Amino acid sequence: MSGKFIVVEGLEGAGKSSVIGLIIKALESAGMGVEQTREPGGTPMAEAIRECVKQSWDESVAEETELLLMYAARVQLLTNRIYPALEAGKWVVGDRHDLSSQAYQGGGRGVNPTTMNAMRDIALKGFKPDLTIYLDVEPAIGLERARGRGELDRIEQAGIAFFERTRARYLALAEADESIIVVDAMQPMAMVHSDVSKVIAGYIA
Ligand code: TMP
Image 1: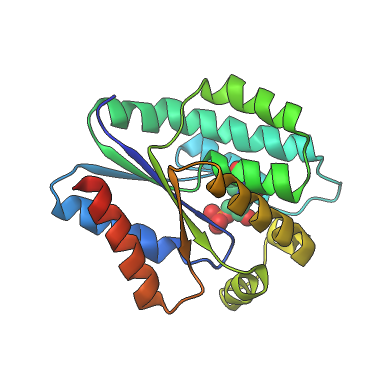
Image 2 (image 1 turned 90 degrees about the vertical axis):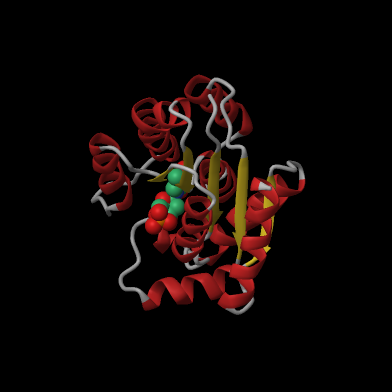
C-alpha cells in the first residue's frame, strides 16, 4: 500500500468536519489524490448500518450488537474503499475509525477488553491508520455544540457520564500511541486549525 490513512477523531461537537476540510485542502494542495470516508458509513451497506445503529429502537440495544454493527460497517468500508484507495496510492482522510469503537464501546459502554481485542483482530487483522488527530473537547462543551445542530441521536443521548468515560479512554489511548496526536478543540477555531495545519505540514514534509 503506498497511500496513507489519516483519521480525525473526537466526541460530538469537537469540530471534526471543518478540520477534515482543512486537511483535505492541505493534501490536495500538496498534490495528493485524496479520498474522504466516514464511519460508520461510506459504502451503501455501511450507510444503512449507520442509520440502523444511530436510530432509537423500542427495545434495548445490547452493547455487543452496537459493537458488531460498528465493525460490520468498518469491514465493508475497508474492503470496498479504504484498501483499494491506499493500494491506488491515494491518501484517505477518515471521519472516525477504530479508535471510536475503542473509546465509545470499550470506554463509554464498558465492553470488556477481551471482546474488544477479539473483534478488532478479526475485523482489522493488524491494519491501523498512519496518523490520527484526536480533537479533545470536554463533553459538556461538545454536547452543547451538537445540541445546537439539532436533535441528539441514540448514542448522543447516552448521558454525560458515558461521554466522560469515552473521553478518558480516548486520552489514555492517545497517551500510549505516538501515531495519535491530541489537539485541544476547546480553543478558538482559528487556533485549532493552526495546530492541525502544523501537524499535517510536519507529516507530509
Ligand atoms: P458522527 O459521525 O456524526 O460523529 O456519528 C457517529 C456516532 O457513532 C457517534 O456518536 C460516535 C458513534 N460511534 C461509535 O460509538 N463507535 C464507532 O466505532 C464509531 C465509528 C462511531
